[in-house]
Image (tube, rainbow, N blue to C red; front, side, top):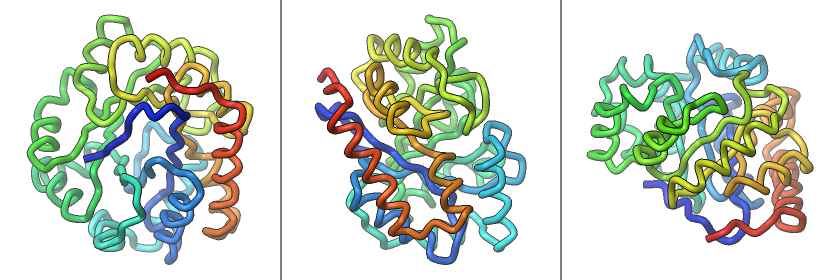
Length: 255
């Protein structure tokens, strides 16, 4: 299971597309060494409806390399980077194996969390049961337009943490202030950490997001650098910059 907690400092969760390069697992080590509290691993899918151009390009690049869910899980099996690993993908890939098998495969590879953005809370019970049986925390998403009653359902059903998106756009969209209001409301509904994502590309944006959330997810901003040739060491240094900005300028999270 994932072990994210409200720690007294903003949580930092970077994302990497599995199989983006032959040495892609080196990014996991560098992220963990440079301040990640957990790491999201994207399992590439050919029709990523929630992802913007950068993550779509990363997924296409990985798929052209012949990457599969099985190959990604084989790559991470036996790796211990010292922080939780969380898979993010689409339900087609889950259903292709069946939810129980998919979740058992994640657990066997050492992955403790799962995010499936195209599974709404009122259709999540079967996947949630399969995840729980395998020891996987299924995290659900909340959007700025989600009604308050439904937010309470999402907060109650999520495990590990709650994933708040700052905008109704795709990954890589501009960061929106509506995400802060969403995160603040969610934090009144759950003891789990609330992480804010989508459009957080700079240190000031990360610090702003951490004023209302328990932490941030950095995705497209990192993947753009990887697609442009950034090495694991270079990306580790980029993440370290976010870590310093959050620690020096971000507010303490309220326990």
